[in-house]
Length: 247
Image (cartoon, rainbow, N blue to C red):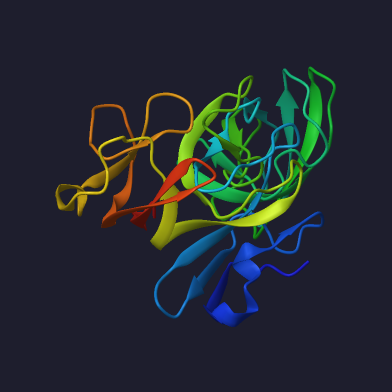
């Protein structure tokens, strides 16, 4: 599979940003940007939870981080071993990231499975560019933030940070684009909408469920501001126009 990273000047007429498909087309996190500045990220919906439209989309923290000690790492190598203390599925961290002592962050290409306290082989994109290391350096791996996204209201899932807004209802275990920047329809939980005072207010992820609020408060992630104060009601839910600034 190619690794485009960013699809520039995408043609809106293709409407690919509104596609949801069973098979992975691009690496998770790939950026698509339209000429008007709207930006999207390619994501995979959590296998256990469908994704409803118009909601904040979050990375899933379910078993998504692991720490362990590395074996010897050779200068110029792209492969090294990792002595895990927990089970790791094959390619669980593919397209994810590894942080090694010394501040080096590398993108993970693949990893082998381990059932517990055993060695797993990690392959990275590029090569190790520091000096050769003896074994025993600690490292930390995280899954790609766009690999198993959920909405905040999913019961039984542990939410991470907001990584985008869903554009459509997406089936569990499918792939889709989520919007991160520019004008976007977002469902708001505020009841006092529809007046000019709401325009330009900050839009934040609420403290519970899938709510989006027009206020800033400690501990709530700001995702944009209101671009228009009028409300469009659809299926008993209030959509507002928000100008996203998630990235």
